[in-house]
Amino acid sequence: MESSLVDPDDRRPVDFAVRRDLLARLDGGWRPDVAADGAARLLVVSRARWLARHGPVTSR
Image 1 (cartoon, helix red, strand yellow):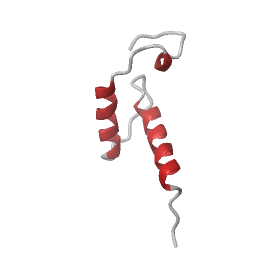
Image 2 (cartoon, one colour):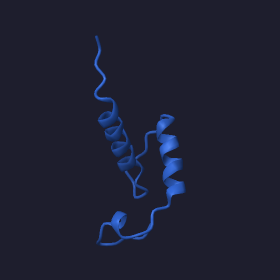
Image 3 (cartoon, helix red, strand yellow):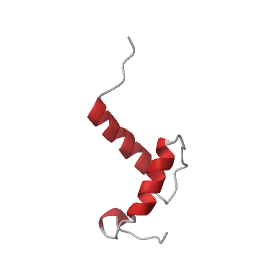
């Protein structure tokens, strides 16, 4: 991935096929290192969206 001084998420085309593959791996239990591929950030965002839809899990 090329280095730049701007946020690449808002200025470059998104490779949706790569993101779908990353989400499938994350949903399968893969836990990525923090790296330039954005997988760790995608993990945080996907889990936050899940919580927004389903609410927090509580034990009874």
